[in-house]
Length: 128
Image (tube, rainbow, N blue to C red; front, side):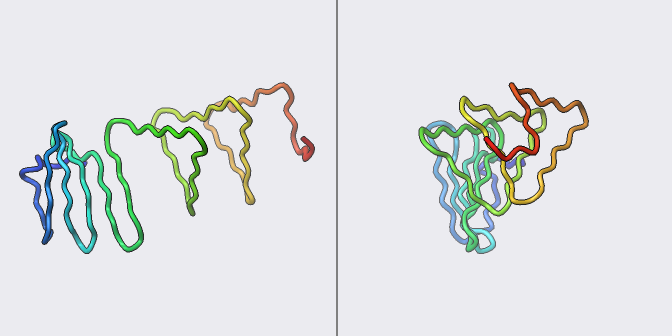
């Protein structure tokens, strides 16, 4: 999603606050269709971060660049649905145990080879 330069943005809201930051980014706070919207616009004029506040709760979009989250203790996600899509590759790495559990069906699909490596592969085994 590309935005025009901040100075040329249409502001269909009754109220708007704009603050130019030392980094060249701009912070824009506006109302649109009954929602409050906070935007961080990159110096290039592209939208970098958008937070929409509505009656259903906040919605956060981060566009471009990369997103890194670092947590010293536990990091939890709880939601009704969880989708992850990676265009090139996806990886989960841990120095400890890894558990994948579901109360329903588990489906693994691969168009290529599927490899399972381990000291022992235990199938249909409820004992640990």
